[in-house]
Structures are given as C-alpha cells and as structure tokens.
Length: 562
Image 1 (cartoon, rainbow, N blue to C red):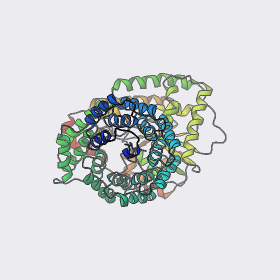
Image 2 (image 1 turned 120 degrees about the vertical axis):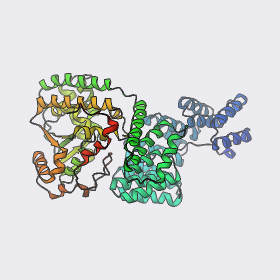
Image 3 (image 1 turned 135 degrees about the vertical axis):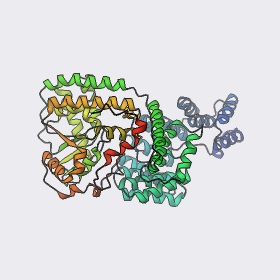
Image 4 (image 1 turned 180 degrees about the vertical axis):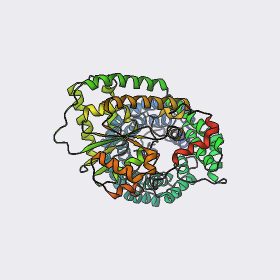
C-alpha cells in the first residue's frame, strides 16, 4: 500500500480437515504452535515431520510461513516451492510465495504468484487482497481498488479489504470516502487499530487535528507500541508534564527487546514531548539518539553526497554547452519547481501557489530524479534523444496527475541539484528557490524523523552543516549560469510581508492576482510532508528563532553557517 496506509498481507495456514493426508494430528499440533507465535518450535517440529514424510505439501507450507515470520525470506521461498512441487494446484502456497516476494520489494514477481493462486481458485479472497496491495505498490490504484472490491464481494465482512479500499481512496484524495470505508471496517472489527491509525492520518492531512489526536490516541490504546502513531501524535499535540504518553514512550525506549526501527521513532516522539514541557537538554538528547540510530539504519556517508554534487557540477558544464531541446508545441501547461533545503518553507510556498485556480499542487514527486539522474551524473550521454526522452517522460507523467490545470507544481526540495537538467529539457519551466535562515533550517531538519530514505544528512549535526554548505555551493553554481531564471524567495520575508511577496511571486509565474493565495491555511489539498500540521495555520512570524532554545546543547554547531 501507499505510505498513507498500513498494508495488510495475508499468509494462509491450511484447513486440515480438507487435506487428504495422514499427518493431520501432527499438523494440528504445529499449527497450534504457529498460532501461539512459537515459530522456533514450528520449524523444528515441521522438519521432524518432513524427515518422515518429505512429500507433504501442507507441512512445507507451514514451514514456509514460520520462516517468513522470522523474516528468513529465502528459506520461506524454498519451502513454499517444495509445497508446490508436491501439489501443483496449491493455491495457498502460491499466495504465500507472492507475500514473500512482496516483502522483498519484488511486486511484479509477487503479482505473478497471486495470479497463479487465483487461476486455481478464482474466489480466493486473500489472494485478491494481496494482489491489490502489490498493484498499489506498483502505482496502479484503480486496479488495486478493483482487487480489494473483489475480495470484499467474496467475503462481505472482510475488514482488511475495507481498510485497504479506504487506503486507495485516501491515496486518490477522496478523503471523506476513505473515512467511510475505515468506519465500515471498524463496525466489523471494533478493535482494528490499523483502521484507527489510517483515520488519524486522514484527519491529520485534512488539518482536523482534534479528530486526528483522538484517532491516534485510540490506536495507541489498542496497540501501545505503534511507533508511527506515537510519532504522528507527538507532532500535532502539545504535551503537558504528566501526559501518560511520555511514560509510555520512556518505557518503550527502555525495553531491551524494542526493535531499532521503532525505537528510533520513539526517540523523536519523546524529544518533542520534552521540548513541549521545557526540558530542552533532554529533548536534544532524544533527537541526538534518534538521529544516530536513523543514520545507522540508512548507512549514510556524507562523502557519497559530496561525490554526487561534484559529478553533477562537472556534467553541468557539458549540459550548458548544449542547446536546450525545443518545447513540444502541444504542451499546454507549465511545470513549477519549488526547491531548497528541506524544512525551508517549500510546503508553505506550494500551498500559497496551489490556492490559485490555475494551479495543481502535485507535492513532492520523485519523477524528475527518475528520468534525469543518470544524465546529470554523467552515466548517460546527454544527446538529443536522451534529453527528449527525459523531457517527454516527465511531462507525460506530470500531466497524468492533473488533466486541466495551466500550472503544475513539483515540490521536491532536493530537485535543486537538477536545476541544470531542468533548464536543458524544460525551457519554459519556472523555478522558485526558497531560502530560510540557515540555523533555523538545519535545526528543523535535525529534530525531524523523515520516513523517506533520501535525507540521511539530516541526522548528524556535522553532516547536516556539511550538506548545507554543499547546497549553498551548488546553488551559487546555478546562479552563475541561470541567475535571471531562478526566482529567489526568502521565507522570513514572506512571513513578514505576505501580501507583497505573494504578489511578486505570482507576477514571476505569469499568474493574475487571486486573493485566495493569501489564505493557504484554507487550501483543502492534501499535504503529506512533515510540515502538514503547520500549513493549516495562518502564516506566522518567529518560527526561525525557535532553535535558539537549544543554544546550550548545540554548542556552536551552526556557527559556521552564513
């Protein structure tokens, strides 16, 4: 599923009475062990049974499920394939193979196995559900919705199918419809924490924070260790000293068996709690520990980005010598790129622009990187064919997001590294560079957990300052080449003179004045970034000074920033 929803994949264990084997009592025993979560003994007992009857597909299937539960995916795959070897019509084993391949990030292979399961049993509701999840991962929302509805038609009380229907509707921006689907799931399964969590996400995106807080709080009451719910909740509410969530977070962090990915998110949640109640030293320590763990998870090395920027600057000279490819005459819209450091105000700027009737705000897209990164880094020759392919592919995918607007925004901040490529393939594109006070920008990055894996520089203060200087250097580089084409927007000036700065911005874009652009907090489009809870408020000043509360623990970390 999308990042907006919890995925529900179904592993199937056999209905023993329907299987014509003599091992039923023994199989019932290992199924009971599986249901208790005793996977080690499931594996041991299954292997014992297979020593006696190595051709029993049911036992192989259970063994595969136990390996899957221990995240031993390759061993699970081998076991499921053995099950299919001894029963070529074993739909459940094909389904489980699909689930395992999906867990490895191989959605296309997973779809093949789900289709094989459904070719054996067209009314296999779990396989339809799992197929829908993989289709959504492949970006095929309409097809995914069809699969989920098919699962629901087979199994009318299928709460998981309703939950995932809600997730697709949420992804499509049909937020109230998604709420209806989640609530239907809850009527079937009242303690379904995933549905409550997804309701929290929807209400959070809509800016209905009291409703979001209630949904996240309910999620945590049902699943006290739901790390994403803790993180989302912590950043939209104001903690008081005796808030019970603080004690729970402290307990979860202290538990030695808490997995590192979850512990990392608890650190950031607790840091926000300590910050709210004025324990700034303790808050800093939590952000520090969370960042240290996140950097480890991502295996981030600043030298990789240093090399990347060096390659892009080198290739940009070759690109600059080339004549930009001509625009296709049928182009009927203008792409608007909003770039800068993350947490610099790019989300607010997109909200302002997309409040205009001629603009569709597409949010943070990965499309440009997908089509131009190899050319920008010198891995692919920048000739007419490669540039036209990149341009046409990008514009085609962008237009698919919205079929009518005159302007479409792409608010991926890190696209600043590809400014040279943008002007080589999109001569009519508009670029807005948003810049905010450097220490404020860096602090805002450091105190945030980002689900995306592309911001590894933000989790260590030394890396963060080094990356900021790389950013300043490459922006200065683009300025020497395209100074008259990049619109420079100062975030702090925008918050102080909203009317004047907004008028100048719209004039640069070639748009007529619309008063709605002064009220970005009323813009009902979805916001999926870490800034979503801020842009539902009126534009306010002073946010760039909040980092000074941490002057002591920062110990001069930002002194070298301009």
